Image (cartoon, rainbow, N blue to C red; front, side):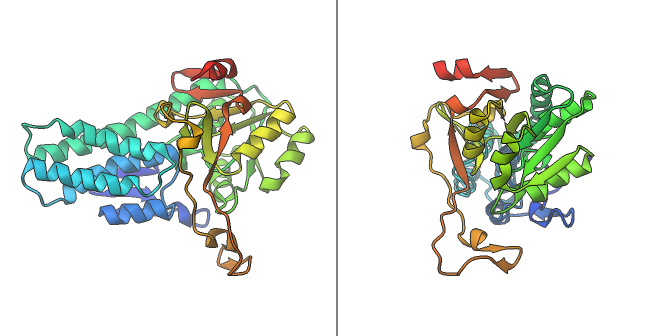
Length: 339
Protein backbone atom coordinates (compact mmCIF):
# COMPACT_ATOMS: atom_id res chain seq x y z
CA UNK A 1 0.00 0.00 0.00
CA UNK A 2 2.82 2.42 0.80
CA UNK A 3 4.02 2.42 -2.81
CA UNK A 4 0.57 2.79 -4.40
CA UNK A 5 -1.11 6.13 -4.89
CA UNK A 6 -4.88 6.36 -4.53
CA UNK A 7 -5.19 7.90 -8.01
CA UNK A 8 -2.67 8.36 -10.82
CA UNK A 9 -2.33 8.56 -14.60
CA UNK A 10 -1.33 5.57 -16.72
CA UNK A 11 -2.74 5.94 -20.25
CA UNK A 12 -6.00 6.82 -18.50
CA UNK A 13 -6.96 7.40 -14.88
CA UNK A 14 -6.00 4.62 -12.51
CA UNK A 15 -7.42 4.47 -9.00
CA UNK A 16 -7.94 2.19 -6.05
CA UNK A 17 -11.56 1.02 -5.97
CA UNK A 18 -12.40 1.94 -2.39
CA UNK A 19 -15.71 0.10 -2.48
CA UNK A 20 -13.78 -3.19 -2.57
CA UNK A 21 -11.91 -2.55 0.67
CA UNK A 22 -11.17 -4.00 3.15
CA UNK A 23 -11.75 -7.39 1.53
CA UNK A 24 -9.42 -6.79 -1.41
CA UNK A 25 -7.12 -4.12 -2.82
CA UNK A 26 -8.20 -3.64 -6.44
CA UNK A 27 -7.22 -0.93 -8.92
CA UNK A 28 -9.40 0.08 -11.86
CA UNK A 29 -8.83 2.04 -15.06
CA UNK A 30 -11.10 4.95 -16.01
CA UNK A 31 -11.18 5.69 -19.74
CA UNK A 32 -14.17 8.03 -20.12
CA UNK A 33 -15.56 11.03 -18.27
CA UNK A 34 -18.81 9.10 -17.81
CA UNK A 35 -16.94 6.32 -16.03
CA UNK A 36 -15.15 8.87 -13.85
CA UNK A 37 -18.47 10.41 -12.81
CA UNK A 38 -19.78 6.95 -11.91
CA UNK A 39 -16.65 6.28 -9.86
CA UNK A 40 -17.12 9.56 -7.96
CA UNK A 41 -20.84 9.01 -7.36
CA UNK A 42 -20.34 5.42 -6.20
CA UNK A 43 -17.43 6.48 -3.93
CA UNK A 44 -14.88 4.32 -5.72
CA UNK A 45 -12.86 7.52 -5.36
CA UNK A 46 -13.65 9.83 -2.44
CA UNK A 47 -12.04 12.23 0.02
CA UNK A 48 -11.54 15.93 -0.63
CA UNK A 49 -7.91 15.97 -1.85
CA UNK A 50 -8.38 12.79 -3.91
CA UNK A 51 -11.43 14.35 -5.54
CA UNK A 52 -9.32 17.39 -6.39
CA UNK A 53 -6.93 15.15 -8.29
CA UNK A 54 -9.87 13.28 -9.84
CA UNK A 55 -11.33 16.54 -11.10
CA UNK A 56 -8.00 17.61 -12.56
CA UNK A 57 -7.38 14.25 -14.21
CA UNK A 58 -10.97 14.26 -15.45
CA UNK A 59 -10.41 17.41 -17.49
CA UNK A 60 -7.21 15.92 -18.89
CA UNK A 61 -9.12 12.75 -19.77
CA UNK A 62 -11.81 14.81 -21.49
CA UNK A 63 -9.13 16.56 -23.52
CA UNK A 64 -7.60 13.28 -24.66
CA UNK A 65 -10.98 11.72 -25.45
CA UNK A 66 -12.24 14.73 -27.40
CA UNK A 67 -12.16 14.46 -31.18
CA UNK A 68 -12.13 18.22 -31.64
CA UNK A 69 -9.36 19.57 -33.83
CA UNK A 70 -9.92 23.31 -33.46
CA UNK A 71 -8.57 24.64 -30.14
CA UNK A 72 -11.73 26.64 -29.43
CA UNK A 73 -13.89 23.54 -29.91
CA UNK A 74 -11.65 21.51 -27.61
CA UNK A 75 -11.82 24.17 -24.90
CA UNK A 76 -15.61 24.13 -25.12
CA UNK A 77 -15.52 20.36 -24.71
CA UNK A 78 -13.41 20.77 -21.57
CA UNK A 79 -15.81 23.32 -20.13
CA UNK A 80 -18.76 20.98 -20.66
CA UNK A 81 -16.92 18.00 -19.21
CA UNK A 82 -15.73 20.03 -16.24
CA UNK A 83 -19.26 21.15 -15.39
CA UNK A 84 -20.49 17.55 -15.52
CA UNK A 85 -17.68 16.36 -13.24
CA UNK A 86 -18.26 19.19 -10.76
CA UNK A 87 -21.97 18.37 -10.49
CA UNK A 88 -21.34 14.86 -9.15
CA UNK A 89 -20.51 16.00 -5.59
CA UNK A 90 -21.43 19.66 -4.97
CA UNK A 91 -20.38 19.90 -1.31
CA UNK A 92 -16.75 18.81 -1.73
CA UNK A 93 -15.00 21.97 -2.91
CA UNK A 94 -11.74 20.29 -3.93
CA UNK A 95 -13.45 18.58 -6.85
CA UNK A 96 -14.42 21.93 -8.36
CA UNK A 97 -11.02 23.34 -7.47
CA UNK A 98 -9.22 20.57 -9.38
CA UNK A 99 -11.45 20.95 -12.43
CA UNK A 100 -11.11 24.73 -12.48
CA UNK A 101 -7.35 24.66 -12.01
CA UNK A 102 -6.80 22.61 -15.17
CA UNK A 103 -9.39 24.59 -17.13
CA UNK A 104 -7.64 27.79 -16.11
CA UNK A 105 -4.26 26.39 -17.12
CA UNK A 106 -5.44 25.80 -20.69
CA UNK A 107 -7.93 28.65 -21.04
CA UNK A 108 -5.35 31.18 -22.16
CA UNK A 109 -3.80 28.91 -24.76
CA UNK A 110 -4.86 31.09 -27.71
CA UNK A 111 -1.83 30.22 -29.81
CA UNK A 112 -1.76 26.53 -28.85
CA UNK A 113 -3.04 23.78 -31.09
CA UNK A 114 -5.29 21.00 -29.83
CA UNK A 115 -2.44 18.60 -29.07
CA UNK A 116 -0.62 21.26 -27.05
CA UNK A 117 -3.81 21.90 -25.07
CA UNK A 118 -4.10 18.18 -24.34
CA UNK A 119 -0.48 18.07 -23.17
CA UNK A 120 -0.98 21.17 -21.00
CA UNK A 121 -4.10 19.70 -19.37
CA UNK A 122 -2.38 16.45 -18.45
CA UNK A 123 0.75 18.22 -17.22
CA UNK A 124 -1.34 20.45 -14.94
CA UNK A 125 -3.28 17.45 -13.63
CA UNK A 126 -0.02 15.70 -12.80
CA UNK A 127 1.12 18.82 -10.96
CA UNK A 128 -2.10 18.81 -8.92
CA UNK A 129 -1.47 15.17 -7.90
CA UNK A 130 2.21 15.66 -7.09
CA UNK A 131 1.51 18.81 -5.10
CA UNK A 132 -1.13 16.99 -3.07
CA UNK A 133 1.47 14.50 -1.86
CA UNK A 134 3.86 17.32 -0.89
CA UNK A 135 1.08 19.30 0.79
CA UNK A 136 -0.07 16.32 2.84
CA UNK A 137 3.48 15.64 3.96
CA UNK A 138 3.69 19.27 5.11
CA UNK A 139 0.33 18.96 6.89
CA UNK A 140 1.58 15.84 8.63
CA UNK A 141 4.82 17.42 9.81
CA UNK A 142 3.07 20.55 11.11
CA UNK A 143 0.25 18.64 12.80
CA UNK A 144 2.61 16.09 14.36
CA UNK A 145 3.94 18.88 16.59
CA UNK A 146 0.57 18.84 18.38
CA UNK A 147 0.81 15.14 19.23
CA UNK A 148 2.80 13.93 22.20
CA UNK A 149 4.22 10.51 22.86
CA UNK A 150 1.42 8.36 24.28
CA UNK A 151 -1.49 10.37 22.83
CA UNK A 152 -4.70 8.57 21.93
CA UNK A 153 -6.59 10.15 19.03
CA UNK A 154 -10.20 9.74 17.98
CA UNK A 155 -10.93 10.20 14.28
CA UNK A 156 -14.02 10.04 12.09
CA UNK A 157 -14.59 8.79 8.54
CA UNK A 158 -11.42 8.38 6.44
CA UNK A 159 -8.92 11.21 6.06
CA UNK A 160 -5.97 8.98 5.24
CA UNK A 161 -4.01 8.26 2.08
CA UNK A 162 -7.17 6.81 0.51
CA UNK A 163 -8.80 10.24 0.82
CA UNK A 164 -5.80 11.88 -0.85
CA UNK A 165 -3.32 11.07 -3.57
CA UNK A 166 -1.05 9.79 -0.80
CA UNK A 167 -0.15 10.15 2.92
CA UNK A 168 -3.41 11.69 4.16
CA UNK A 169 -4.61 14.71 6.14
CA UNK A 170 -5.87 13.68 9.61
CA UNK A 171 -4.22 10.27 9.37
CA UNK A 172 -1.23 11.95 7.76
CA UNK A 173 -0.67 13.81 11.02
CA UNK A 174 -0.81 10.52 12.90
CA UNK A 175 1.52 8.88 10.38
CA UNK A 176 4.04 11.69 10.66
CA UNK A 177 3.98 11.57 14.46
CA UNK A 178 4.49 7.80 14.34
CA UNK A 179 7.32 8.25 11.85
CA UNK A 180 8.96 10.58 14.39
CA UNK A 181 8.96 7.73 16.89
CA UNK A 182 5.96 8.81 18.96
CA UNK A 183 3.67 6.14 20.39
CA UNK A 184 0.24 7.12 19.04
CA UNK A 185 -2.92 5.04 19.31
CA UNK A 186 -6.18 5.64 17.47
CA UNK A 187 -9.89 5.14 18.11
CA UNK A 188 -11.60 5.00 14.71
CA UNK A 189 -15.35 5.59 14.48
CA UNK A 190 -17.07 3.22 12.04
CA UNK A 191 -18.79 6.17 10.25
CA UNK A 192 -22.20 4.92 9.22
CA UNK A 193 -23.88 4.46 6.86
CA UNK A 194 -21.06 3.50 4.47
CA UNK A 195 -18.50 2.66 7.15
CA UNK A 196 -15.51 4.55 5.78
CA UNK A 197 -14.02 4.41 9.26
CA UNK A 198 -14.24 0.63 9.66
CA UNK A 199 -13.63 -0.26 6.01
CA UNK A 200 -10.92 2.27 5.14
CA UNK A 201 -9.39 3.98 8.18
CA UNK A 202 -9.10 0.78 10.21
CA UNK A 203 -7.62 -0.96 7.16
CA UNK A 204 -5.03 1.78 6.67
CA UNK A 205 -4.03 1.77 10.34
CA UNK A 206 -3.67 -2.02 10.42
CA UNK A 207 -1.59 -1.88 7.21
CA UNK A 208 0.69 0.73 8.83
CA UNK A 209 0.83 -1.17 12.13
CA UNK A 210 -0.51 1.82 14.07
CA UNK A 211 -2.46 0.56 17.13
CA UNK A 212 -6.16 1.06 16.41
CA UNK A 213 -9.47 0.37 18.13
CA UNK A 214 -12.70 0.45 16.14
CA UNK A 215 -15.86 1.80 17.78
CA UNK A 216 -19.44 2.47 16.75
CA UNK A 217 -20.21 6.13 16.15
CA UNK A 218 -22.56 6.21 19.15
CA UNK A 219 -19.72 5.19 21.50
CA UNK A 220 -17.68 8.37 21.04
CA UNK A 221 -19.22 10.21 23.99
CA UNK A 222 -18.60 7.34 26.38
CA UNK A 223 -15.04 6.94 25.15
CA UNK A 224 -14.38 10.64 25.81
CA UNK A 225 -16.06 10.57 29.22
CA UNK A 226 -13.96 7.57 30.23
CA UNK A 227 -10.80 9.45 29.33
CA UNK A 228 -9.78 6.95 26.69
CA UNK A 229 -8.85 9.63 24.13
CA UNK A 230 -7.18 13.00 24.62
CA UNK A 231 -7.41 14.51 21.12
CA UNK A 232 -9.85 14.44 18.20
CA UNK A 233 -8.49 14.93 14.67
CA UNK A 234 -10.63 14.94 11.52
CA UNK A 235 -10.40 16.03 7.91
CA UNK A 236 -12.65 18.42 5.97
CA UNK A 237 -14.47 18.58 2.64
CA UNK A 238 -15.02 22.35 2.66
CA UNK A 239 -14.21 25.15 5.08
CA UNK A 240 -16.26 28.33 4.81
CA UNK A 241 -15.70 31.52 6.78
CA UNK A 242 -17.87 30.20 9.61
CA UNK A 243 -17.96 26.38 9.50
CA UNK A 244 -16.18 23.15 8.67
CA UNK A 245 -18.05 20.73 6.42
CA UNK A 246 -17.05 17.11 6.91
CA UNK A 247 -18.59 13.65 6.98
CA UNK A 248 -21.89 13.66 8.85
CA UNK A 249 -21.24 12.92 12.52
CA UNK A 250 -18.32 15.33 12.78
CA UNK A 251 -20.45 18.00 14.46
CA UNK A 252 -21.50 15.58 17.22
CA UNK A 253 -17.86 14.69 17.91
CA UNK A 254 -16.95 18.39 18.08
CA UNK A 255 -19.72 19.11 20.59
CA UNK A 256 -18.72 16.13 22.71
CA UNK A 257 -15.04 17.06 22.58
CA UNK A 258 -15.75 20.62 23.74
CA UNK A 259 -17.95 19.33 26.58
CA UNK A 260 -15.13 17.06 27.78
CA UNK A 261 -12.32 19.57 27.30
CA UNK A 262 -10.65 17.61 24.53
CA UNK A 263 -8.87 19.50 21.72
CA UNK A 264 -10.65 19.13 18.38
CA UNK A 265 -8.44 19.66 15.32
CA UNK A 266 -9.30 19.82 11.64
CA UNK A 267 -6.62 19.00 9.07
CA UNK A 268 -7.09 20.36 5.55
CA UNK A 269 -5.09 21.83 2.68
CA UNK A 270 -5.74 25.43 1.70
CA UNK A 271 -7.49 24.16 -1.44
CA UNK A 272 -10.35 23.05 0.84
CA UNK A 273 -11.00 26.61 2.04
CA UNK A 274 -13.95 28.46 0.52
CA UNK A 275 -13.88 31.64 2.59
CA UNK A 276 -16.09 33.63 0.26
CA UNK A 277 -19.09 31.60 1.40
CA UNK A 278 -20.94 30.95 4.63
CA UNK A 279 -22.53 27.81 6.01
CA UNK A 280 -25.96 28.87 4.78
CA UNK A 281 -24.68 29.12 1.19
CA UNK A 282 -23.59 25.48 0.92
CA UNK A 283 -25.77 22.70 -0.46
CA UNK A 284 -25.21 19.51 1.51
CA UNK A 285 -25.39 16.42 -0.67
CA UNK A 286 -28.10 13.92 0.23
CA UNK A 287 -27.38 10.35 -0.81
CA UNK A 288 -29.42 7.26 -1.67
CA UNK A 289 -31.77 6.25 1.18
CA UNK A 290 -30.86 2.61 0.62
CA UNK A 291 -27.39 3.34 1.98
CA UNK A 292 -29.14 3.49 5.36
CA UNK A 293 -31.78 0.82 4.74
CA UNK A 294 -29.19 -1.73 3.61
CA UNK A 295 -25.67 -2.73 4.61
CA UNK A 296 -23.49 -5.36 2.97
CA UNK A 297 -26.42 -6.75 1.00
CA UNK A 298 -28.54 -7.16 4.15
CA UNK A 299 -31.75 -5.19 4.60
CA UNK A 300 -31.75 -3.33 7.92
CA UNK A 301 -34.95 -1.28 7.65
CA UNK A 302 -38.36 -1.42 5.95
CA UNK A 303 -38.21 -0.51 2.27
CA UNK A 304 -40.85 2.19 2.65
CA UNK A 305 -39.47 3.92 5.73
CA UNK A 306 -38.45 7.54 5.10
CA UNK A 307 -34.70 8.16 5.35
CA UNK A 308 -32.67 11.32 5.88
CA UNK A 309 -29.16 10.68 4.57
CA UNK A 310 -26.99 13.81 4.31
CA UNK A 311 -23.39 13.04 3.40
CA UNK A 312 -21.95 15.93 5.44
CA UNK A 313 -22.67 18.20 8.37
CA UNK A 314 -21.37 21.62 9.35
CA UNK A 315 -19.36 22.31 12.51
CA UNK A 316 -19.24 25.96 13.64
CA UNK A 317 -15.70 27.26 14.03
CA UNK A 318 -16.19 28.01 17.73
CA UNK A 319 -16.19 24.23 18.28
CA UNK A 320 -12.80 23.85 16.57
CA UNK A 321 -9.54 24.17 18.54
CA UNK A 322 -7.45 24.69 15.42
CA UNK A 323 -7.17 24.02 11.70
CA UNK A 324 -3.91 22.48 10.53
CA UNK A 325 -2.88 23.65 7.04
CA UNK A 326 0.29 23.28 4.99
CA UNK A 327 1.16 26.87 5.93
CA UNK A 328 0.66 26.49 9.67
CA UNK A 329 -2.02 26.12 12.34
CA UNK A 330 -4.98 28.49 12.51
CA UNK A 331 -5.87 28.84 16.19
CA UNK A 332 -9.38 29.30 17.57
CA UNK A 333 -8.68 32.95 18.43
CA UNK A 334 -7.84 33.65 14.80
CA UNK A 335 -11.02 31.88 13.68
CA UNK A 336 -13.14 33.97 16.04
CA UNK A 337 -11.68 37.13 14.51
CA UNK A 338 -12.54 35.75 11.09
CA UNK A 339 -10.67 33.43 8.73
